Length: 291
Image 1: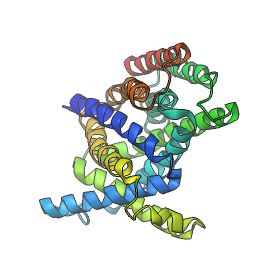
Image 2: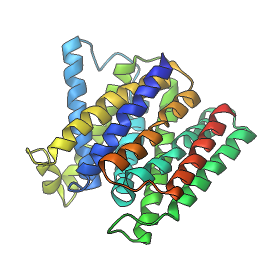
Image 3: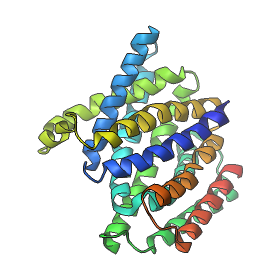
Image 4: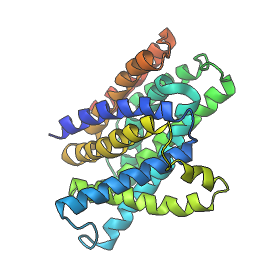
């Protein structure tokens, strides 16, 4: 069952990435991420009201703190960096950089919770990094410079590293917690952490203006529902009901979906260099997982 959830994550996330790319044309990274977190948190609260299940007081305080910390690192920080990367390099190249997701989980699982790290996994990490290097040699998107391309890929790498840390520190809690509860606590805790930041930023008026009906909502709302609500539930369920490495490789099939969808709906070119980088990244992901 966990494998089905992980594959569902890949499909829903790939659709969301295309919608976020369109949203990012008008909405800055932090503002878009804050909108996503706020709306999805509201959806989770409404869901728990409807199913009449408690959100608070049902687990030790330590579990809440771990899940909130996971949300801040893997959602507030990682997803803001993700949007910075997506805006600069496009959905196709971003999907290649996302290949670092599986190796980062395996690496931090080894570093933080003592999971095994073998030679195949090290070789796989090297292959993914080689794929990312090939991606940096790709021509920049229209209107962008090579400097912007390289910095965009750097933001993407940092996004995957923080995502890996965020999910690994939550794994021990996920192993004994209900999926919907854990997902909701992470998201709501992240919103509580992001709210004072949004209020203190000089651009706060612009950030909160996104909550008024606007043309970008046609991408922001469905992107949030699919990417920050459904996909997040599927992702956590996949991590809970199968091994982290297995879930990670199945999640990573989103790279293929994203590149295809970006070519069809965003008009991004499907170049030989992009295909080569994707093959290297996917080969590395396989080595990391089976190692």
